[in-house]
Length: 342
Image (cartoon, rainbow, N blue to C red; front, side, top):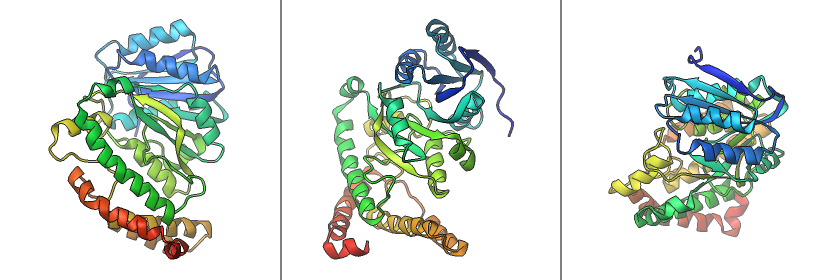
């Protein structure tokens, strides 16, 4: 598929960049400057920034251009008059492709969002994590000031989901301990905070051209191909708590659902207790099969069993029903005999 038509403008030295930060932006005039300021501060002159403005009707493009001119930050500004059919996935892919020629050998590519501000040590934390992993999925934190202004129901419902996330992570750790991700603090693979190098990106085919969940798809493809995926607690970004987002399936949609929905959907990565246990056991079997170079047929059978589990998006009522069941599984797995055979 040919890349969407766009105009490209470069700023500062053309490279080589040890680090590139890529940012899709659509109608983000109010938020793009704090995002860019935070990224520049974290970079500390070690690379460049790529902003892919797409389908904007506000001053996002002009604001970003003026920012590059004013700060002298090395970068690329992509102007797509329309958002491509492949949505944010296609935009992220275009941004990564645009910076590829400017990268130093072994450079790190990082992604964030225009409504996010990276922490001052975000670049350092990602580079440190990339010493022991191939794809770093960072921690996304709701902007505390904006979160405090949301209805109390959001925090209450979020706590119910959070308990189930914690149980899921604990069960996974017992069944399928991963050496390069020994104590994951979350289950997210969010475009607001990803870091990788180009060999991985090329191997998995890049961000898929889809309107949402392109970040999770990239992480799933990397894991399936045997790359080391790590869920980092130290690579952190702060993200807006707006209720009208720019892409389907994002944080804004989740927050809005907790306000308006009688029984809102929960994170798509969550599954009922039985499926959580079964998937973890199959992932362990697959990982061990890959490590010892097992026959392709056996690996295909495991993949077929994983695909057969399927996924049905859970709602909050499902989480309430499944929480005691998953807690029971965790208690059983924590027993001395089960730990030997998990």
